[in-house]
Image (cartoon, rainbow, N blue to C red; front, side):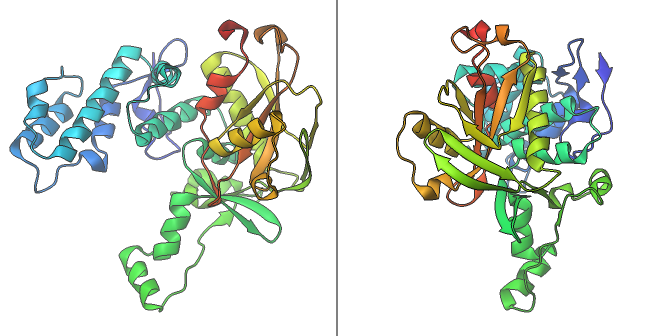
Length: 357
């Protein structure tokens, strides 16, 4: 079992986890302490003595057995619920043995019993693990899309993905905290976009920057055809963020399912024998379902598609017999507010695997 280091995503907790012989991440006391450090679990001046005792006890011994009476003694309802969530998360991790096994079990159960922030934290750690040998800033930036919602903007003919939380913060404070917020409100300061598009000439800065989430990822393409079962995408950038995202998704499938696949952005899909598709988010799932069923899709909804991808299995025998050898089409779309929220579990749950047929 090996200890990890070089946590290029600050806050992922990766450096505090250990790998087992399979290469999956084993939870540790140090990792659980970082979860206890979340703002939702932080002590405040109003914290009652029971909450202080519970918090300090868990900080000292994150694996200590759960005692119902300790939790029940916490007076504040919200605080009590937050600690109940933490204990549920902790116990689930320990029972599964690894973060990967916990994530798969939770998603396959269909009964996710912890908030999205916990799920996103697990996904971030898993991605940090499978990208440990990665030296491609485009892939690392694309991987952020799997655990941080992105805001899609069009700028001078480019389709750019920006970290939603970062862009919203800059819009509200110009990157100057409360002082910036006050200046913006008074009209003394105009919003500034302290971000840059990730490119070959600044890619090395990604690894060194403390504010990596300020990098925009270029997802530029042009939708030029929209037929019920035929969509044409014209890639206009030699170094597309979509290609980097495809490489990350390949790693994701291989790491968690042990299946080798090849994923490519689709320039054109005109498949009269379309057999299987997977939406990477809620919006694209609904659009692809409608197209598959030959239901009309309004132009406005069609324009929300960011891209299509084709996924092929390296070994068709690992696919369900009725679709073996056929491509799987993936979709990525923004919602009506221009946000992309990738659900990385969709690829794990919905691929036509022979073992699940």
